[in-house]
Each structure stands twice: as structure tokens, then as C-alpha cells.
Image (tube, rainbow, N blue to C red; front, side, top):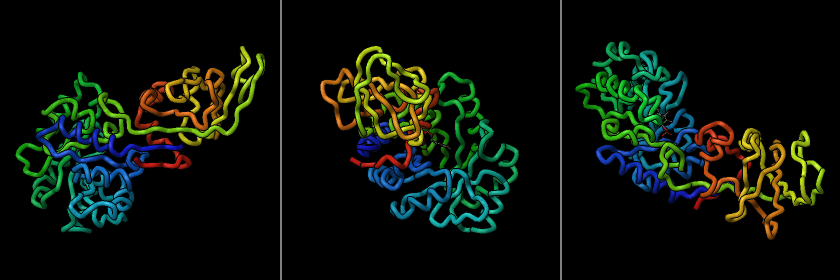
Length: 339
Ligand SMILES: *Cc1c(COP(=O)(O)O)cnc(C)c1O
């Protein structure tokens, strides 16, 4: 029942991605509560698999996992040194001259890294800003110099080569460890790997790592079933009307749990009982989804919305988004069980 997370699959996906980048150390991105799956359980499992370099978006996320990881694990904070943050036990990736000078003034001996902008224009020092602080920063011994690819999930996109060239130019002759590739960058090949790779979504079973093992199963409990006669309708807007005598099940989950209304917009969403698919009918409401279970031999206690047959990227296609957003939207009302 609820969200079942297979930690062995996360570990296997991490190892498979690490093997794609044999010349680099594989880190692990566990921001946004490990993409919604629970960083306090996922990060130690990745440590056990061999990861030593962890990445979170915010210092608070780093503080939450710090007690769950041994001292030799480094936790990098992608947003860097924000004003007033407690960075004890963490390594901020400094993104601007302002962050650099704030960090050096407040924690002159504290470990830090540098994030460079190689073209995405989202986070990181611009080439000119980097040139201005480069010798001072390198003298202080950064733990990492990183940048991020904007188009790595499109292997033929010209930005990949352009960002690679920009990153190389900015880090020429630097002895600190360098990092450019997330999941997509790992799959672009060895030119992109440098010293540390930063897989995220691929570990959690999502594209662009097409060979990933599925990680999550999400089953939704049935609350009740009823018979609906031809001509009767179901749900808000009377959006679905029975053509035949139908058995309709109502399950306990809805858009408040991250299962967006848009998932049902084309009437193609299915819930699963074993290998049998049951069409979702009517609109998804805040806490409830209605399903046509007429063709099942027996009414089950629960139906699956995420499993090996219907993964996060299939749901993403149905609602017009990406697997990352499906995972990170799965709400706190689902109990998380780890296997
Ligand atoms: C989110 C993120 C990653 C991980 O990306 P995936 O596509 O999930 O592998 C790596 N680096 C940075 C800077 C990120 O923001």
C-alpha cells in the first residue's frame, strides 16, 4: 500500500550510471528529498553503494541528511552560500562574486566549491566574474568546480558541445576536481565526465536513463465500489457516462497527492491490478479517482498507478510534463515504504 521504494533498484541504477563514467567518481543528487522518495533513506543507501559526494539544492536539505551520512561524505549545496544560512558540515557551491566574498569573510577556512555558468544562465559565475576571482579562489582550495548542462537530454543539441568548450576554457589548468555531467551528461560520453558526475533522475528510474530499473510502485486503496447503469454518469462535470452496466471503484488519491487532473485529460490513464489495466474514468478530484473495474474477475483491495508497466515517464507523457515532476509531486499523504 502507498509508495514502495526499492532501494536496491536505486543502488543498481547508481552503479549502472557510475559504470558509464568509469574515469570519474559518481556522486548522487538527493535534492528535493531525493526527488520525493525520502533523502533520509535514499542518501544512506547510496553511501552504502559507494557514493561519497552528495548534492542538495538548499542548505536545509543538507542539514537534514548530514546526521544520516558518515563524515567522509561531502554534501554540496547547489544554491551556495545564501545569507544567514548555517553551513556546518556542508560544502556550498559559490555561484557569484557576492557569494564568494560573503563565504570567505564568514567561514575563511570552511570547505567550498565553485559553480560556473557555461551557458545555461541560471546559476554560477560568468566567465568574466570567474576570471576576476579565479586566482584567489583557487588558492583557497575549492573542493569542486562545477557547471550544469541545459540540453543534455538532447544529444544532438549544439549547446552540449558549446557548454563543454566553455567549461574547458574556464577550467583550463585547474587542479581542483571538475564536474559537468548530470544523468544526461553521463550518457553523452567521456568528454563530459571530468572528475565527478552528478546523476539524479536516472537513479530514480527516470529518463533520459532509458535502461534504468523501475524504483517506485504506488498503490492506491479502494474505498468503495458501485454498480453504474447505462446512462448514469460519474464524477465532477458528469464527465463520463456509462455505456454498459459498469462496476466503478473509487480510490483514495487525487490531485492533492500530486496526481494531476491533466493525467486523465485524454482518458488514457490506467490503474493496474496485477497485469490487468483498468481505465480511469471521469475527472481526477482532490482526494479521489474513479476507475472502471468491470472487467476484473474480482475487486482488489488496491490498484497501482505506478509500477513496472506504467512508470513515471508514462505518467509524465499523459499530463504533458517530465518524470522529474511526477516524482517530486508525489505527496506526503502516501506512506513511503522501503524495500
Ligand atoms: C538537478 C541537478 C542535477 C541532477 O540532474 P538529473 O538530470 O536529475 O540527473 C545535477 N546537477 C545540478 C546542478 C542539478 O541542478
